Length: 423
Image 1: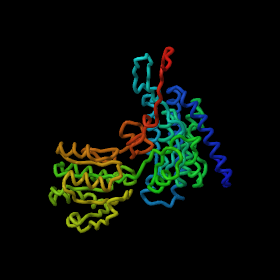
Image 2: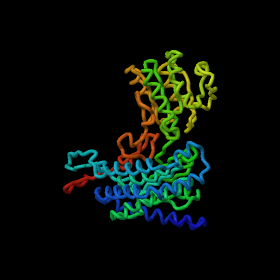
Image 3: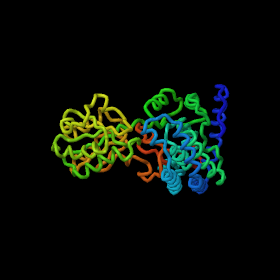
Image 4: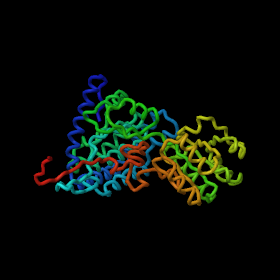
């Protein structure tokens, strides 16, 4: 991939060309049979598997040049297992039913008109993301399966890795007879390209930002096209007084430490005041033993001298690191109130054997994903059976939760008559 020249006029012209190519390619992809789209995904998967060495080399160069936190480095890092998981994700997406042409509703009018609502692609989707090269494969594949074209803008730290992944995807597209311009990447690290993308309302139908608060805030402030926002994941685990203690210990540990840099990682642990001091120590002890920094309220600090005091801001932070805020609340209502004040509407879990408490939590917590007796780390499209995801949408329009192929479609009405005219 040749980098764009530095001139702002040249950059604008090149971005406009990218948009025109995407619009033309989308028309082709939208009318392509699902078998052709699936073939492209399977062949791209094969190219990823065959290109592991080249991918690892590109990623090694990105890692060496990156100046990021350990959590961000974990997001950026590729190894053989992650590449194989990307390839398997493409195959899983290919195995999904065709999301296009589904009859969503059908009815007849008294005048004889037959009205059908059917699923169609969103169009051209711009995806702006940071240090996760796997988003290149996931987003491109999901958009393709749903009949969309994609313009990808990865973060500069993952530029080489994303380029190598895109090369494999292009092999799948071209060998299946689809235009490579159906999935394009902005070939520059220049941040000015982001501003241009946000104003390309003639070429891009939806923008999906996947990154930190500053990125999402900028996109929402500047975009002239609809935004499908993936906001920060200030995720909570609430351990109720009616919890199975062994289960609570296992879930709290996994939710925080399985991978600290993913958006589904727990950032706050809430403990019911009814739990005994020994039960609370049992929950926080393994976390402390694994070198997780706990920042607690006075009740938690009284349990263990290793717990640091929590500042007011700690309840609102997405750490993406081995840091966890821990507090005591008054039962399920206290947990619901705390999450309402501090949560980000992403993913929140309750651990309890009390069915009434569980149902109250699941109904009252206003988050895209709510879980009962399961780790927040299941907040993932692949774990939902979607093959992959572009992100977790935390708003209310057009999609919420994992954004997979169905969420990347819209609908249109098809009306059939036999000569009716309106009186």
